Structures are given as structure tokens and as C-alpha cells.
Length: 185
Image (cartoon, rainbow, N blue to C red; front, side, top):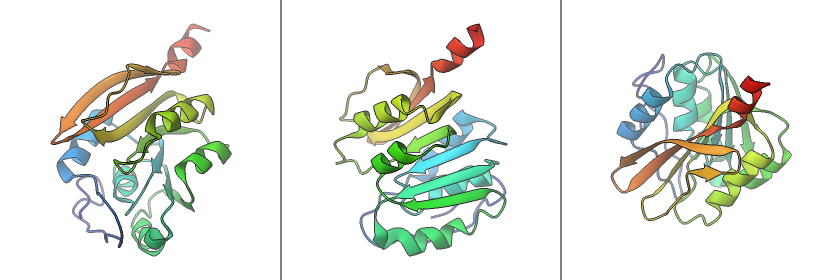
């Protein structure tokens, strides 16, 4: 796998053993193009796997990237890959995404979720992200899911901003409606 853009463009990263479904190059390039400038933003990569998406965010200017991966088999490769991102603050947590979201006190500008497609609690996890208020007021939540799943235009304080199809999978971009509330105050 390779980094598709930014200062680490074309650098290769290792793929850990076990079940992994790395985000396609074309999908990552498109996703980061849609997001635009990441300079100074914080990025949370839930279900990190190899860390490719978080490293891509660092490559494109994110100031901090937090990686969360539950599978301990992927731990050594994830830590090794994250070393590439020497231009930004990085943290790695080996725990479930649900536990991390429940425990963290940090806020993030962008939260990316790429759970295993069979994972049954995707929407509940996004609701938890919204309820725990770990997304900044102007933040975005992006989820990668199979096209067979149906998602609403609104999840708690999050509103669907964009939807893109890549093969048999979909990327949904939700924005935090707290942004509009705060601007009116």
C-alpha cells in the first residue's frame, strides 16, 4: 500500500496480518480531495488497521492524528507504520472504537470510521461520537460502509453533507450541526 498524496506521497506502508480491508487508493485520494486543506486539523482514525488513512491525513497536513485499533495482532505493524508521520503529533490506542469514544476527553476536527463491513453497531457508534461531543463544532465524520447498508440524512447532531460511491462501498460525509448553532450565538 502507498500514500497517495502530500509530503509522504508514494511512501509504502506495511500491511498487518489478519483480516484487513485497506481503503482503496482511488477512494483515499478522492476523500482527501473532498476534505480539502487539513493543515492544523486534528484527525481521528477509528478502526485504523495499517494506519494508512491516518498517515495519509498527516501527509496532507493534519497537526495531530490519533489511531485506534482493537486487533492486537496489528499493533506492531501499526506502530511501525505510524513512525512515517514524523511531521505531526501521533497517538496509538489499542482498544475498541466504542471504548475509546466513551473515554476520550479530546475533540477532533475529522473523525474517520472504516469498521469491518460485518460490524453491526456502526450507526450506534456514530451516535455515540455525537453524544460524547468529541467532534469540534465545525467538524466532520466520515464513514466507509458497504452499499447494502442504508443510512439516514441525520444522526443526532450530524447531517449528511456528501455521499460518494466506490465500487461496492460508500463514503458518507456528515457535518456537525453544532457549527450553525454556535455561529448564531
